[in-house]
Length: 282
Ligand SMILES: Nc1nc2c(c(=O)[nH]1)N(C=O)[C@@H](CNc1ccc(C(=O)N[C@@H](CCC(=O)O)C(=O)O)cc1)CN2
Ligand SMILES: Nc1ncnc2c1ncn2[C@@H]1O[C@H](COP(=O)(O)OP(=O)(O)OP(=O)(O)O)[C@@H](O)[C@H]1O
Image: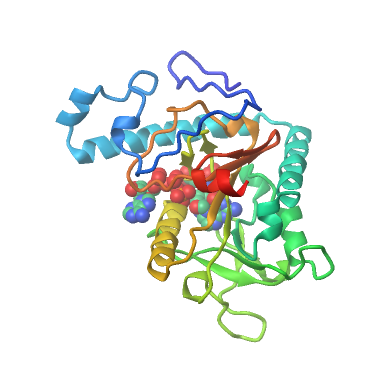
C-alpha cells in the first residue's frame, strides 16, 4: 500500500487477484464528470460546470502530476528483488498467453530500469530471437520520440543492436538501419498491428492509464486507432504492464478526453481483461 501523509492523495491499492467482476470498460471517452469528487479535491459537478474548461483541464493536469509523484515514490520503495520477481511473473504471463503467441505484429516499449518500468527484455528477446518459438514470426515496432510536441513514431527493429540511448536515457531505434535505409514506420505500413504492450505510471481495472505526462502514447494510439478505422482493420489489443503498486482503486486516476483506455492489464497476479475486445481474446 502507498503510505500517504495527511495532505497527500489517498491512494489505496487493489488486492489482486479478484474474482472476474463485471467490466466497467468505458464505451465512450472519459470525461471530467467521471472523476471522484472527494479524494482528489475535484470540484463538485456544479462548481466544475462553472469552471472554465481551461481551469478544469489545469485541475486534471495538476492531479495527474500529484499522482505521478505518489506512484513514483511507491515504485522507488520496491526492492530490486520485488521488482525482479514481478518482472518475471509478468513476462511469463505474456509469453504463455494465446494473444501474445498469436500476435503477428506488435508495438512494445523498451523498458528503462531507472524509470522503474516493468521489464520487457525477456519478451522482446523472445520476439527477436530467430531460434525461439516466437522468433521472427512477429514484426516488432518500438517508440522513437521525434520532438516535444507529442510526436512519437514506432519503428521496426530486428535486433536490440538497432537501439541507441536518447537524451532521456531510454533506448530507441536510430531512424536509419545499418544499410542507411529509413526504418519501417508502423503508421506507414499496409498491415495492421494486433498488439500494443504499453508502459505507464498507474492503471485501474476500468482501463484508465496514467502515463509520464508527455502525451506521446495517447497521441500515437489515437492516430493508430483512426488509421485502423479508416482502413477497416481490427483494433489492436492495448495491454499495459504493471507492478502491483501501480494498480489503483477505481476513480483515483483523473482522466480527460484525450486519454485512451487500455483493454487489459498484466500484473504479477496475472492478466486482467477489461474491455469487451479483451474478454473475447483473453
Ligand atoms: N520505455 C519507455 N519508452 C518511451 C516512453 C516511456 O514511457 N517508456 N514514452 C512515453 O511517453 C516516450 C518517452 N517519453 C518519456 C517521457 C518522460 C520521461 C521521463 O524521464 N520522465 C521523468 C520525469 C521527468 C520530469 O517530470 O521532469 C519520470 O517519469 O521520472 C521519459 C520518457 C517514448 N518512449
Ligand atoms: N490526442 C491528443 N491530442 C491533443 N493533445 C493531447 C492528446 N493526447 C494527449 N494530449 C495532451 O498531452 C498532454 C499530456 O497528456 P497526459 O497527461 O494525459 O499524458 P500521459 O497519458 O501521462 O502520457 P502518455 O500518453 O505519453 O503516456 C496533455 O496536455 C494532453 O491534453
